[in-house]
Amino acid sequence: MGYSGKFSGWRVLKEGLTGNKGWQGHWREVQPKPEYDLVIIGGGGHGLSTAYYLAKNHGLTNVAVLEKGYLGGGNVGRNTTIVRANYFLQGNSEFYSHSLKLWEGLEEDLNYNVMHSQRGLINLFHSDGQRDAFARRGNMMINQGDDAVLLDREGVRKHLPYLDFEQTRFPIYGGLMHPRGGTARHDAVAWGYARGASDRGVDLVQNCEVTGIDIEDGVVKGVQTSRGPIRAKKVGIIVAGRSGQVAAMAGRRLPIESHVLQAFVTEGLKPVIDHVVSFGMGHFYISQSDKGGLVFGGDLDFYASYAQRGNLPMKEHVMEAGMTLMPMIGKAKVLRSWGGIMDMTPDGSPIIDRIDGIDGLYIDCGWNYGGFKAVPASGWCMAHLMATDRPHEVAEKFRLDRFRTGVGIMDEEGTGAQHNLH
Amino acid sequence: MRITCPICGERDRREFYYVGDAVALSRPDPDDGDIAWDDYVHNRDNPAGVTRDLWYHEGGCGAWLVVTRNTVTHEVLQTELASDAKEAMA
Image 1 (cartoon, rainbow over the protein chains, first blue to last red):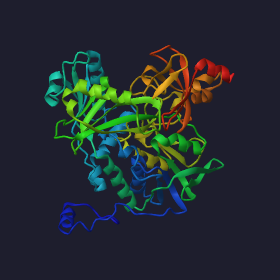
Image 2: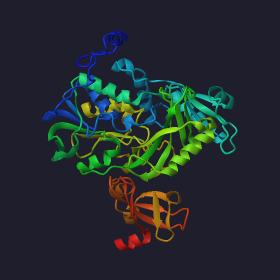
Image 3: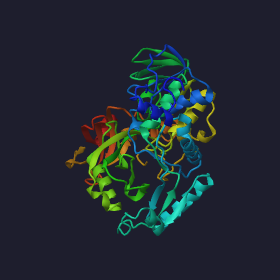
Image 4: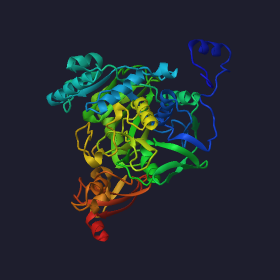
């Protein structure tokens, strides 16, 4: 496989016996060329997977990914790593279903161990009404071709005996289990896509900040960067929380407000939590990483922020919710916490679309707090859109104009399609 | 983050409900059309830096506030009553 060489058991053995001197970098160091067919702004998970599928599915390799920092240094390098396809609404449902199928073949496709672990995800419910809603969601998941199992209290107890089932505020009635849900090693996903794209000829340019987008008579001509101008026939904006700033370079405002979402990791512990457990009533979810750390998070801080750190009230809320659900974690020590910049849309669903009125400019954004699991399908569909100028069938509802027209709003939570409600 | 309510003084952030961008102070006319209303309801400048947003002192006096704030540092620069801010714009 070109530059970096294929991974295999034999190679690990051989390198192990010869001092591990044969390993090389996973992608080529490059200087940006003055012109490309396509330029991707943003070297995160979505940008790298887009570049990979442009090369692999569409044979487009005269492509550059421009990253202002280092590859995979944003949300794909800091998240709670959950992979699932348990969406309810048409539009989201087929997209995340497609993404999960790509996850299931990803390691073989990339020849890269992304440590995808389908350990099962359990969403807890705490009332009869919630049970009905979860039963309906489970049926939607099954209709989509994915898997769902409705568990009663004893069914949950079998899997998660350590929960406090009798808590007075939210006694546990049962859970909706999604056996194919799980986690993956977040950095490896970015690295695997980067290696695959680089091996196929895509230039991955780090420390290259885009400072302007050149548009003449409504047609994209290229970008200005901290490393000089780069001409391009097509430009894709895939910058998550920074979408507002980059779209402004093209004179556009987006239906996006960037918020902070905090997450936490404890010291490494022996295996204790085998699943991904989601406690929606407490805005709390948790899993255990392969290193042993408990990885958990809660809800947004709920104010616009680019600080990449949150405030104490939400930390306290998350800790309280964790203690309510599983008192056993009380003595685990929190090792670190961080805050990611979430590109929140009014309806909580993403956007993969052309930017109307500017030929050759495309945007992939609005992943809210669920972008990690979408990395494969987002790249797949964005590459399809940029290569063919037509939306991919599983992402055709991710339109930018749905907020203006009101047609196709995908408010998965049913809280209303306006900022500050998701 | 602490916010100074012009009526109650400096208070914990938890007393305040965040509404969003202070765009609500300049609502379009009902007949301005879908583009103006889409812009008002959905589209945002979303600045990394100084922004003005609308907060409600839910756990205090119930006043609507315009908070000028830095989204990168979380520094609160200024707080004023939304009614005063609206008058100043007129």
